[in-house]
Every structure is written in C-alpha cells, then in structure tokens.
Amino acid sequence: MPEIFQTNPETVLLPDVGALPELMGARRPIHVEVGFGKDVRVLREAARMPDELFLGIEISGKKARSLCRKAVRAGLANVRAYRGDVRPVLAERLPPGSVASFTALFPDPWPKWNQQKHRWIREATARQMRVALMPGGMVTLATDHDHYRDQMKVVMAGAGFELLEERPGVPDDDRTLFAQRFERLGESVTWLRWRSPETKDLAPGGGAGATTSSV
Ligand SMILES: C[S@@+](CC[C@H](N)C(=O)[O-])C[C@H]1O[C@@H](n2cnc3c(N)ncnc32)[C@H](O)[C@@H]1O
Image 1 (cartoon, helix red, strand yellow):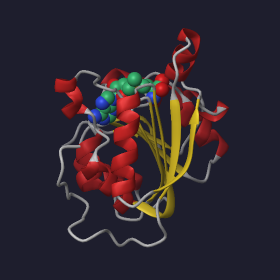
Image 2: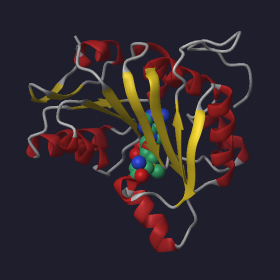
Image 3: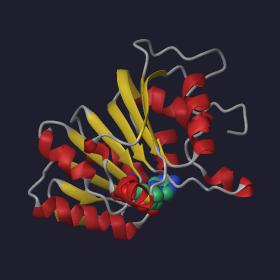
C-alpha cells in the first residue's frame, strides 16, 4: 500500500511512481515541471490554466510537500506533486502522447567532469520526453551552465526536437527563485524552448529508453 500524503482529494503527494498514471487519471493535457525546488511557478501556471493538469516532480520530499501545502492554500485542484527522481517517471510512467509541456528551470548542473553522469537531461531522457509529449508539445529549459546548455542542445536535437528560441535571461513567467538569484549575482543564464515534431516516429534504433552515447 503506497504511502499517500493526502492534502485534499485533488492535490496529493504520492511517493510510489507505480501509481502515477492512476493519480493523473484521464485529465489532459498534463504540464510537467521537473525540479521546481522552493519556487511556485507551477502554481502560477495552474491558476492561469485551471482546466489543465500540472504535475510537479521533485526529488526533495520537503520541497514536494511544501508545494502541496501551498496548492491547497491557494485552492488549486489541478496540481499534483510527485516526490522522487524524474528518471523512472520518464522511463516508465508517462503515457505516450499525454504531456503538453515539460519545464525544467535550472536543473542541477553537476559542474565537475566526474559528476556530469548525474545530470538528468541526456540522450535517453530527451527521447523519453519526446515519446511522452503530444505532437507539437513544448520543452522549456534554462541553465547558468554553458556546458550543460550545449549538452541540452545536442541531445534535444538528437531526439528530433526543433529549437524555437534560445535567449539570454529568462522571460518574466519563468523568473524562478534561481533565475532571480543568478540575476542578482550578475551571472549569465540561457533560456531555451523546443517543440516536438508533429510525427511520433523516432529515428531508427530510437525508442523511449534508447541510449547510445554517454550523454
Ligand atoms: C537548482 S534547483 C532549481 C529550482 C527551481 N527550478 C528554480 O529555478 O528556482 C534544482 C532542483 O531540482 C531538484 N532535482 C535534482 N535532481 C532531480 C531529479 N533527478 N529529479 C527531480 N528533481 C530533481 C532539486 O531537488 C532542486 O530542487
């Protein structure tokens, strides 16, 4: 029996990845934000689009619980928070074609060479996002780390995404706590947005779990 931190009937924090599709039910489209941290962008978006479902995925239980509490206080019934690593969710749990958008603002860059294996945006996960996305679905990423930015561009292009926009600084809607921190420190950041192609075909050898390189 998975432990469920029930905050209200519609907004729950569910630690068992197996129950995720059940949790989301038939509600579509789904917008997924990965690693929201202490930021509440996902709540702003949920308030703006009450008929769409917002799933926050965050590895820190404390931050995930905090988002749930804030969603309840804000009276938002269209928010779900999953406490856990995004990777098994992408590999196994998002129904193909169910996601309208993925957003990950300032994913941990793991800047040292020997840490880079911990970055979650890589070839396999880019392909998995493409499979989970509806045709024409969007992926928005931001980073302060040039090497990670370049890695993102390579793996997203490899998965067949079209780069729509790449700009310094983040638009107002995506000015998260980390974006504001980098702004205060005068550090340069890059914001990028891709669109999934209209076709669901992947390149030969591709598939939701396919990975052939080290990124
Ligand atoms: C640098 S913070 C960015 C927080 C927020 N997006 C912002 O811009 O203010 C990165 C967040 O990603 C979360 N995180 C790191 N690895 C993760 C993973 N594999 N799956 C889900 N969340 C992850 C961390 O716990 C942290 O809250």
